[in-house]
Amino acid sequence: MPTKAVITGWGKCVPPVELTNADLEKLSDTNDQWIVERTGIKSRRISHVDGTDLAELAGRRALAAADMEPEDLDLILVASTTPDLICPSVAAMVQERLGAVNCAAFDLNAACSGFIYATANAAGMIESGFVKKALVIGAEKLHGVMDYRDRSTSVLFGDGAGAAVYEAVEGEAGVLAVDLGADGSKGHTMVLKSMGTNGNVFNSLPPEEMALHFEGQAVFKIAVQGIAASVTRVLENTGFSTEDVDVVIPHQANARIVDAATRLLKVDEEKVFSNIENLGNTGAASIPMAISDALDSNRIKPGDIVVLSAFGGGVTWGSIVMRWGERTERLKLHDGELPPTDAGVFEILEPNLRFFAELHGLDPDAPIT
Ligand code: UT7
Image 1 (cartoon, protein in one colour):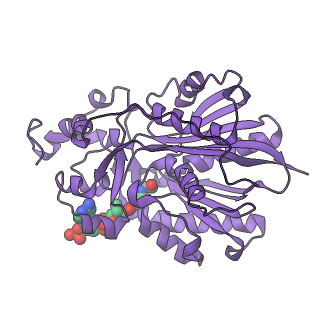
Image 2 (cartoon, protein in one colour):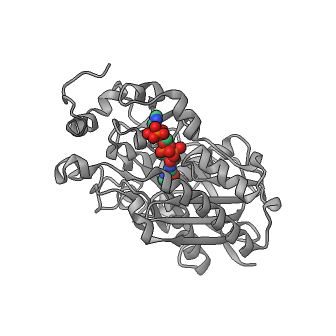
Image 3 (cartoon, protein in one colour):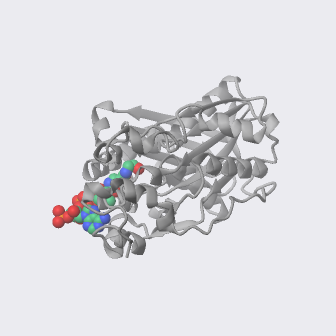
């Protein structure tokens, strides 16, 4: 029997403070109807703590779900476009906090495709025998790089983290096929010059260069084609058709991108999982958070064929076909929580609003009404 990488634990960390469409209406010329119709998003979360805190808690929850001790891990791999710092990596900081003293740790950046790339790495190491137990985390604090008065980007993104424990298991379940790709010639469509959300973000570059540069329409088209082509290729590698697929968990970029890709692929839309409405686009965190939510809502059954697919900056893309294992229930629950906060959403966004005010000819001290 071949050894495969099976998800045995999962978890997510959703910060408590919400940024609603009504809040965004106070910051730019946008409205709830436009945002819902064009993106499917009603609300997103804004983190009052570091991205590493989100990653750690998602990781602890995934370990509890697998009933695994941190010392048993061989690898922690964190996918993030918005690490606290470039070095040390989020993975190394999580390793220290968990006390996962027997494992390797590194970060990987493939933007919104990060969790797919990270899973491919972990699965490859498991199949080759280098690693037996891996914690793969997607974590983002995207709000740190947002100009909230730029309506073309600010409505999309949110913060959060999701995690999965992969274990070496002999049998039919686990990662069956991977399709990864990149096209650096289109890299200019999504550019982020920030040096880490706790790095010298607001002093290293002027505001006009600091915000996420994002060519929404171009990305939209590349994403739809890219996801459809990648899923087609990865299914061909397994010999499965779209009929054989039980659940599709796409990167939650925009509900319309997912709908358009679903139509191109001719997948029954009821098989496609979505949780974008109240989380927004959380970059590399979106797929592991969606896996956790899909399990909590009984959308995944033992033995199901599950397809993960993402598209992101770079540009990068990737898809994975896996056969789910025997268990869809957590073995244990981790009862830790993030530290509570009384901060309102505009208090948390205050550094962003102040930094980017001059770009919009605004007084940085003007109250938000
Ligand atoms: O995670 C991977 C990376 N990201 C993505 O996958 C996102 C990809 N792109 C998108 O999701 C979409 O392109 C957006 C949501 C960013 C924009 O939606 P769109 O349907 O492509 O809108 P658009 O850029 O074509 O703009 C249509 C109109 C424009 O007005 P005019 O020129 O027609 O008068 C925009 O100025 O909508 C206007 N507009 C807005 N209006 C209200 C753009 N943003 C907003 C807004 N609120 N937030």
